[in-house]
Amino acid sequence: MNLDEGKQRFIQAWGSFGSKWGINRTMAQVHALLLISPMSLSADNIMDELDISRGNANMNLRALMDWGLVMKEYKPGDRKEYFYAEKDIWRVAIQIIGQRKKRELEPIREILESLMQVEPADAETAAFKKTVADISDLSAAADKMLDKITKSDRNWIMTSFIKMLN
Amino acid sequence: MNLDEGKQRFIQAWGSFGSKWGINRTMAQVHALLLISPMSLSADNIMDELDISRGNANMNLRALMDWGLVMKEYKPGDRKEYFYAEKDIWRVAIQIIGQRKKRELEPIREILESLMQVEPADAETAAFKKTVADISDLSAAADKMLDKITKSDRNWIMTSFIKMLN
DNA sequence: CTTAATTTTCAAAAATGACTGAAAGTTCTG
DNA sequence: CAGAACTTTCAGTCATTTTTGAAAATTAAG
Image (cartoon, rainbow over all chains, first blue to last red; front, side, top):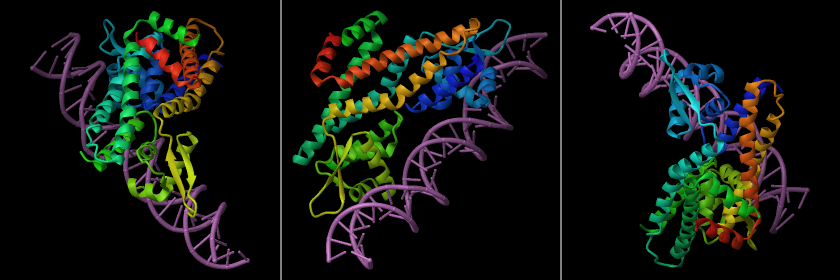
């Protein structure tokens, strides 16, 4: 397998992996491309490599910057914007975990908590409340744990991790 | 808020939560409905409650059984099949984690490992291989950890968890 | 075996989500 | 300031995924 072929496969694989976890395929592909590009790339570079439109490239680059995974760079004597990705994969993971927790876990926790306001009239209601409360408790625990992870340093994580696997 | 309203909200919320994590909205809704139903339900019950077609109900019930989240039940003197969900939310979580690991993490790990077979010709290739290797290492670690979690008992998990939060 | 009840399948339709491209907006340069 | 270079927006189009519904298959009962 040569380099170009490898890169293509990586981009495709990352795109399909992302889409299985609720992340836009193209956004994941742009991210993959930047991850494996030693140099920062312009919107035009990305359009060419991935064969996507200017609008699409722009939208997904904005989104990746929102996620804190990609940064903008200006080159002296060049009016184009260049983009590069955070390369430290540990930081990438932490960033993704933190963002997804905020975007998708926290909102459902709020809803679950509001659902526990149902008046406990009878056995059926009690059963409903119990199910909701159980899910709510689990998600609160997950939230706490993810928060701890994303706010700790690499070393702490590695240590806890090794302890767990003993 | 009354019970029916609460149930509806829960089903909607669970559906939209699922879809943000790469799970079909209707499948998550069927799951939600069964989670909060004290009695097992027939395909017709589910079609009525969620206002979906017979084919759709059937497909998603099969999928939920594949995931090990829903089981079939036969009632004496009734030819219909009835379905009920695993109610223990801890087991539900473990089941989902295990399935997703198998379905989506393991396949990409294989691809990543195959990508490291690229011949290390020059500096660019070396950089590509490093990125891939880093992701591969992280995913191997995640795999190991998730495996440990899904194969341990509730008590061990709770203990490790509490230790981590200290 | 025949009929009726129920489940399964799958091609076509609908719905959803993503992308394009051109126009409008912005920023820089001379 | 005018024009050029580049970025952003978004209505319309396109692609993918999901759903439908009717027919085929299966299963049970008489």
